[in-house]
Amino acid sequence: MTETAPTETRRTLRVAVLGCGVVGTEVVRLLTTQSADLAARVGARLELVGVAVRDTSVDRDPVVDRALLTDDAEGLVERADVVVEVMGGIEPARTLLLRAIEHGAAVVTANKALLAEDGPTLYAAADAAGVDLYFEAAVAGAIPIVRPVRESLVGDRVQRVLGIVNGTTNYVLDKMSTEGLDLDAAVKEAQALGYAEADPTADVEGYDAAAKAAILASLAFHTRVSIDDVDREGITAITADDVVWAQRTGYAIKLLAIAERSGDGVQVRVHPALVPLDHPLAGVRGAYNAVFVEAEAAGELMFYGRGAGGAPTASAVLGDVVSVARHRVLGGKGPVESSYAALAVLPASAARTRYQVRVDVDDRPGVLATVAAVFASHDVSIEAMRQAPAPLGPDGVGFARLILTTHQASEESLAATVAAVADLDAVRRVISVLRVEGA
Ligand SMILES: NC(=O)C1=CN([C@@H]2O[C@H](COP(=O)(O)OP(=O)(O)OC[C@H]3O[C@@H](n4cnc5c(N)ncnc54)[C@H](O)[C@@H]3O)[C@@H](O)[C@H]2O)C=CC1
Ligand SMILES: N[C@@H](CC=O)C(=O)O
Ligand code: NA
Image (cartoon, rainbow, N blue to C red; front, side, top):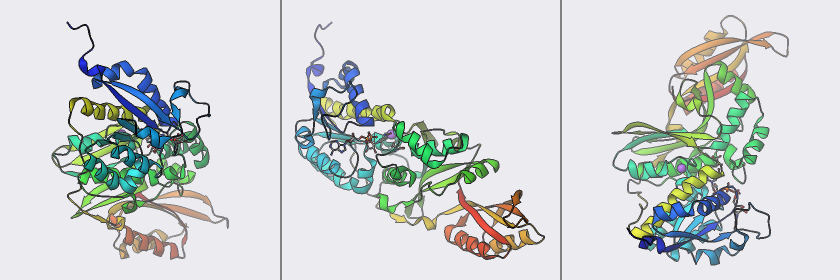
């Protein structure tokens, strides 16, 4: 029996944390409170050498040792072996990570916005310097999804990735449906709970989910997809009425991210969709996320867990820190960018989906047939049509609410159908047009 610690644990690796907000604070907490276990797992002590902040005088969680705070992020990255970037935004995060890589540090980032905008620059720099670039926290918080797609499924051929990848919007839609909260009130709650981005517009307008979709698509299909390639629609147009009617008709509204092979290309989109209540995605509540991956040999896999929040995200960050630190101790290196497939990114209009159209019409004979005829003339096949009693219109005359669900149709045909339906005399208004997924 040896009386000294194994040789490796006498080694020290210097860790720098950039940003000390919701995630950074929890990263510092884990690094501090779990230091003995982390050292044993890595085979070296992880010494937190500094935490870069904008203002060192601000009051912070007591777990953050004030003596470690610095407003000199550039200086800090130059004296670290592992740099953890949890400040967010494009600049100065990109410059700092490139500086860290240049100095030979391994980097771990939760910054999906940066990766989806300019990941290839970082991948190339890390590859050239022979250092690791890890980013598990950037997609779906605590859920291990980057590593499974990047490593576990790398021998298979992924066909489709579909999921809920933004905790804030899932929380908001859930609160709108279960507690009748309006969008703004629910967003405020999500901010208070540490789920939202610094600017929550990134969440509600779908930018955050689009960034994650771009990252997942790039990894899954071995190609480059940037956030600009993602067809994006957020949840700001979803009303309380949409949520209520979704439930009445057997669906939940979810913001979905979908990336799929299509012919010789890939197609990546983010939009709200109706998901049947008996589908597993409909049961994903609060800030939880879930991602389905369909691969040729593996079949369908589902990954589920907390998609946002300080501690869950810090868990993913620390997993990466241990991985890159182990490479420092034991040798070896993580994967580099794999973009050999160089697939074309197709527009979302190329995708065919089912739709639900809600429309208020005059309640008189023949109207139903007239509306159905418009769908038929645009070659959009109706799968189901139901009529719900609706209150009196402003003119005191009764009207009927039609809920039409289509078979798969192209976005173009559907848009033309809806425009023609809206022009009919008997149609008072088209209330909503939503895609149906997962049925
Ligand atoms: N909050 C969450 O649930 C998740 C967040 N992320 C990502 O993690 C990163 C951090 O997110 P949060 O901690 O939620 O944000 P946050 O806004 O709470 O924290 C970021 C911190 O970095 C600081 N910062 C920004 N620029 C700086 C600079 N130039 N120098 C020093 N400090 C600077 C800010 O003052 C702030 O305290 C972002 O990239 C975000 O997208 C990823 C997964 C989940
Ligand atoms: N704002 C993001 C945080 C995690 O990535 C979200 O709500 O999912
Ligand atoms: Na993750």
